[in-house]
Length: 473
Image 1 (cartoon, rainbow, N blue to C red):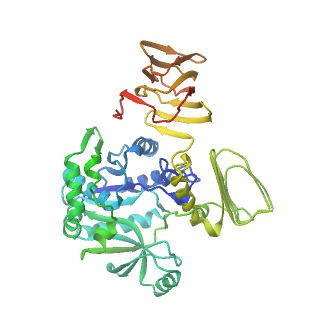
Image 2: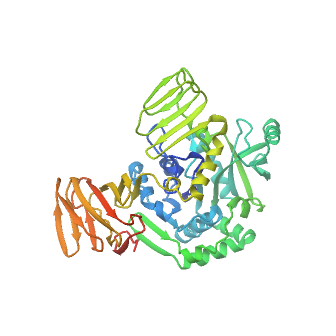
Image 3: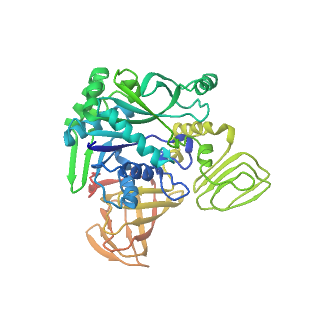
């Protein structure tokens, strides 16, 4: 059986139930597990390991491109070809699948198969997954829209279900009550809907034109206005913001899978989990003698059944049981294990208040490197900035703040008004408000500097870009 297969990773969503580690600009796929790999990296390796892969296609928000590229660079040892479809904002999975199908059709033809994977799922049985993909590909080559149905391990109210007979889908069922879920599992006729799919580009386009023509026509119009960049083993399709806004916001399940007569399912036991809560995350690690799962440094006394995660600080706990404790540099979560689904309400509350803790961490990734807010006070802010070798910030200007840069490692090439200078370790330069300036790392090691901002307004939106190698002007 010979065919072209394109793993298509959908990397979106907020992962609000995994706050405070998951944020809008650092969502769930970028959470690292105990082995150091992120969920996104695991999804990439899962898709790239299939022998027939021509390239790995990722659909994600344009703000996450550089973070995604950095994730892939760490694990793409075989130098698989990469392609990206960049959305200006989320528009649900039907829009993502449609744009991916049109892209694959254009580059590889109608018969090319797409293996649609979520970026934030975990699969612990790779051999079983490979077998399921082979079966799905055989069905997809017969013109089927194939979904992967997971053998349920227990009643779950957070998943959709598929009533199936062999590979035949009898019906899709919405997230049920606990009573219905218990009946579904007991009957042996139902599977969890995993949100993973396999189909040919041509079949999906044909079925979407039949069942959700408004989605398909809007995406086709968007692609006509979108910019494509192509290089050796790399393609980037940047979707046009104005036309993409006209695409209906609907899932691929509602738009086509639940309507089409060409749907098939592959029942499988692949060790699948969508890791939808901190309790599920805690179940992935090893437990100590008291049933605690620990990630980070802790000191405990009379503590049992807890999941404790800390990135930097020592966490002490006394006399607590069945809690989730998650510590990050700017936020701490404490939750009863039986109420972890309510974490989403905290996230939504922060978003409603426009509190930065829903959106970003203190360390923020940029295409050139990272910055970390060390202190944020009245009329001043202190950052640690790391610029990767050969990278450069935009040529920019601030209206309301001045900046003082102190190099602590490496050497910086700096434009400061009319001056161009090199600043080495233990040297500094001052940039008054209103001065055009640019920071570049001409060296082969990371450039590390401390930036001290002062002024009446220190928001990240006080920036005027004149030139940018990353196309952000």
